[in-house]
Image 1 (cartoon, rainbow, N blue to C red):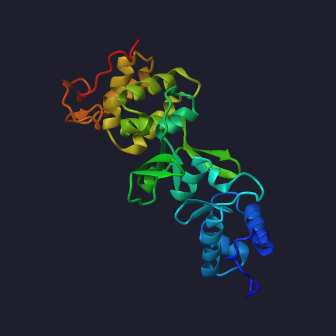
Image 2: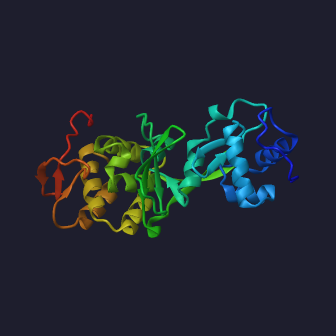
Image 3: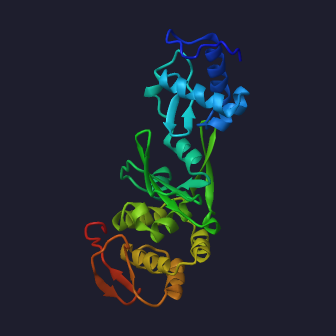
Length: 276
């Protein structure tokens, strides 16, 4: 790049800038960082960082969050009005990760409730459990690498996003009902699961075993009985695997509840009006 190129010129975009920005737009199909841009532009990191800061300032590039950017075609709509697909953003920011909880429930058609936040499960260590990026709020759940399984690939543009399969989604919301929108919505999604095309008793039983948390058997068994769901085999597995001691139906609710010894559960949430 010529040393006398004036990138601080306020009188519009230079030919060299246009060339570099078009190259980024061509190659960067998903959000990118400075290192990626430096490789594409064949520049050192400092020079690339300076250019990116200038382009963002001039509204020629979108800063999604600190260190993460999105290119847009020159001559199109203003970059500051462009938003990347939130699933694509999550896949870049929290990778390795998958979309789960109520967000997966929405994708698989198991809930009609509208949620503004997106639930992301990641094996990456993150400091925050909630984050807002480009106006989208994310609920972030950290999981062990051993529990990174039962995922389905979904394509959003040219980005491959992992989503929990329907049976795994049920396991996750049983483990933490908050990610399913609370125990009342969890109950409704479980009903949709068992009445829908994605029901798979074998997978559900396998995932329960692999997750190694016997509280899940308690919650699932109780909710199957409460919903009067025809799932005799799953119900029997749940009965055989409940742990001793009493567990909360919904651990996110602090209040006490009645004891159900049949399932060793503390029924600390009202499900009145949910059951037909």
